[in-house]
Amino acid sequence: MIRIGLLGAARIAPAAIIKPASLRGDCETVAVAARDAQRARDYAAENGIPDISDSYEALIARTDIDLIYNALPPHRHADLTIAALEAGKAVLCEKPFAMNAAEAARMADAARHTGGILIEAFHYRFHPAFQRVFDIVHSGRLGTIRRVEAAFDVTIPYRTDELRHTLDVGGGALMDLGCYPVHWVRTLVGAEPEIVSARAECERPGVDTSMEAEFRFPGGETGSIHTTMAPDTKFDAWIRVDGTEGQLEIRNPVHPHRGHTITTTLGGTSRTVTAPGQTTYDHQLAHVVDVLAGRTYALTGGRDAVGNMAAIDAIYRAAGLSPRGM
Image 1 (cartoon, rainbow, N blue to C red):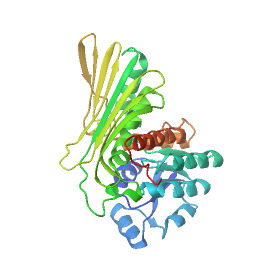
Image 2 (image 1 turned 120 degrees about the vertical axis):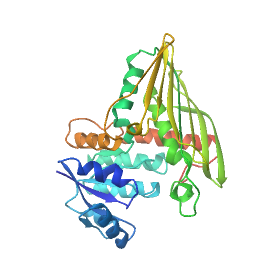
Image 3 (image 1 turned 90 degrees about the vertical axis):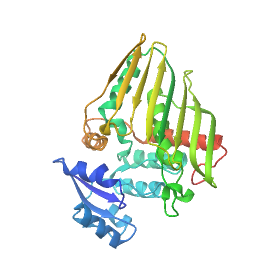
Image 4 (image 1 turned 30 degrees about the vertical axis):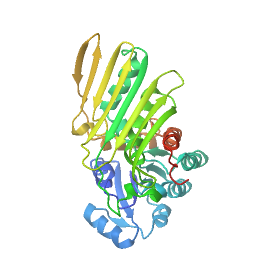
């Protein structure tokens, strides 16, 4: 039985961990810690969690927890994830992985030194829809890959307490949303990009409301990402892959269980399919269980996470902004 502890009374945790764990016979959510004990008690009562810890550090120190889910804002990812690894816990850390690549590297180093398991919670990566896209791209059916473009747009209204609009805790469209298209492009090309150019729109100093960037890869491939959390933005998420022999587009790679399409165009003929599956979070937890059991390796482990944060840092610099926490 994998016993799970939650760092943070996060809105995403019921969908990302609590429900998926409840549907399995080999996982259980045993405790939660929040910024204060009363918040933890309320959250535990709302979500059927049997116990709380009075602090994040107390949760990490428990002997009845195997896996820590760190869903706190990015500024608390590095210190608490490293503490959890040093306490012998496996960690599933929410995206974005850290404030910057230097923090991500410290987290990955801690996993190596302790022999612990560290996984970034890019839940989309484990769904059959993305796996089908990955398989098509790497099968050679599209020929030599020339360009990969991706976008993820969601409105996130500004409030004074909205963390995603708060610089000091790791806010910004690129951090919260753009980390996905950065990861999509990197994963499909299979290499680390050079950032050719980037442009940000900011409604408040240092906090990007929108970001776009152009990539160049060592093999000659190019790429681009776009993301925005601007007011009145309609949800949109897609990836387009251009090869010498054909094209591929997936709509809604981030939540394919809510509806998606995968369209390939070869020789002028287009074919659209879908890939059946559970929620991305169900597949993510299944992957985590397999990694903990030694049946597979982490697809979104520390080295990959450092690469994603390095690209994010470089995009911020190219846009004339500072990476988070620097």
